[in-house]
Figure 1 (spheres, rainbow, N blue to C red):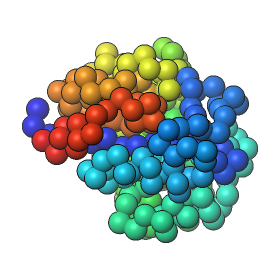
Figure 2: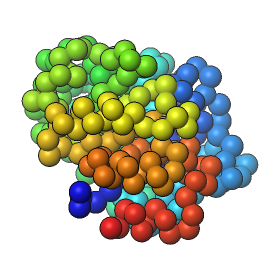
Figure 3: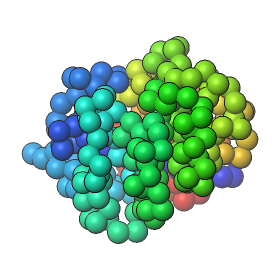
Length: 242
């Protein structure tokens, strides 16, 4: 395939700090310790360190773990707004457990923020349809699995007519686990998705995985491999730019 490879760095926030995500065990996520930004888990500093790794990055994925786990959502989205202010021109995929129109209507029309709707949070296809109508398709749908269990209304996993332009295949038990992407599941979703952008979330270990994803017509959300220095200088830019 000749499509450009989309790679989006990820930061997970908990208690206002960047945390290290490991296999979707959200209650045990701890403040990150990364050689990219020694001695800090400040979101702006860690985000800047990730973005400095590759000038081809045009987006950042921000997961509000407190909100996703049901701990409450800041209606003003203070954390992501601080990031938006710090990085003008960047686009932000915001995953904060949004599941209804009321959860996302404050974001409608914001030029820098793309809401992420996760199937583990969505209660019905009607709720998703209402979000889609209001946001005019300007959102991403995360199809969430834990192991072989699909999380959310079954119809969302089998009816691509309900999917927006960007679809994320989120394999929670592979997040931060260095187990490799779930290529079989990605292939099945890509076959249904048609021209939609499909992004793999969970398991990317290094350049070989990214090459395989590009060959499959998919992109990736990446965190652990970036923090662990899995890419040599210039490798990411060369692959993304091809």
